[in-house]
Length: 279
Ligand code: PAF
Image 1 (tube, rainbow, N blue to C red):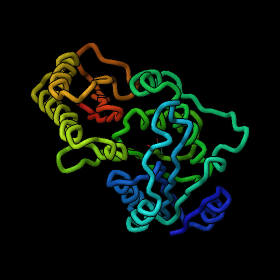
Image 2 (cartoon, helix red, strand yellow):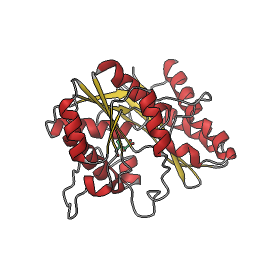
Image 3 (cartoon, rainbow, N blue to C red):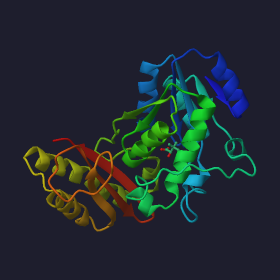
């Protein structure tokens, strides 16, 4: 596995690499969710490229950029064990050259959910992903369904900018008790960790109700809300049931794919989870 710390090193190595090229962008502190993306890329592609870059522009002032967990040694060992060929590990000034002022903004889709909760977040995500796509020039790029809105935004950005990259969404990987894998789970206290399992449990309950024929979005949101409100340490940011492609909140009975998503705070840690309901 070759580790490139500059864009020039990555480009030179990529130039020699056989295609198709699969790409897994990450912010490091890797877990089984990331590894499932690397494994999916390994199956589909002749060369697997991963990046580790904690992207400053997707964090607002006061968010956890400075304390975002980092463990380069462990990350590189995991990537190698799972079959990555190239890893891009750039410094901030490699990605944002001094004086950099160009940003990519995806409208509409980013005004709701995480975009409303974290203004500017998706400008940072879209900008860095576009830059990484330009550096790596992958044929396919792999993202987790856990960050469902991010996946929708990246698909739209890729389409709108005519980037020749196939964006592949991969299923959420979960801990044995159902909690979605996330680098931020490490912040949870034991009590918070115990109560956080209510997120996935509430989604499973909504899926069961949906399978039983419940189509009313208000009923499904309420069912999720009640289960999470039963956890004293949980503070709900939002519970959304929206059209899966436009992310518009639904008020009438579900008739097409719907994204049931939630963000819940435990102290300063905000956890996301979601499921797609398909009639
Ligand atoms: O999902 C992430 O880890 C990040 O948002 C991404 C896509 C690597 C961009 O920094």
